[in-house]
Image (cartoon, rainbow, N blue to C red; front, side, top):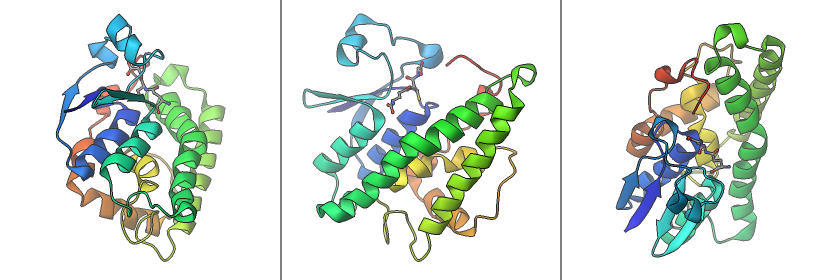
Length: 215
Ligand SMILES: N[C@@H](CCC(=O)N[C@@H](CS)C(=O)NCC(=O)O)C(=O)O
């Protein structure tokens, strides 16, 4: 059976759990990381020498790095609407995944969620937070534009390209931030919230992480 290691509150784990839920894959989940610790356990480091979650093991194959896991699961268990066989269409999903990991995630998740929400008030670097907020809002405007004429970033149906960016929405809309008008992003978020797997694995309350600077 598919095995997954990670904690439910971890952003990168949520992406993977969301896809596992969408695919309806039977799995065994071991909570690891954060207060549960265990990332420096030698047996775990044998699987992922970086000591980070998520990690999966599937029929003897160990995969770490959330986006590598998403691609592995989509290739093995998904259909072509999730991650198309056509290389041009697939590259559309890949672009949104890679852009999210290299641009949106460092700016929003590290630059706001960590630097603002998870940092005690007295330690906040406001100029840096404001820069990241302006840049994040620009990035969400790029998504707003990309959603013109489509229900999902993937097109008519949920695709792999929706998962990393879509995982941000619960925190982006769940914090007291100034946001530009984003009607298409809000409609996309509404569609995602109508999906049971999104509600179960991404909409994990995060209030207890406020001011918590350690994992
Ligand atoms: N690039 C990696 C990042 C992995 C990562 O940094 N995971 C965090 C959780 S989101 C972690 O393991 N933190 C230590 C902890 O949870 O204790 C990925 O996408 O999987």
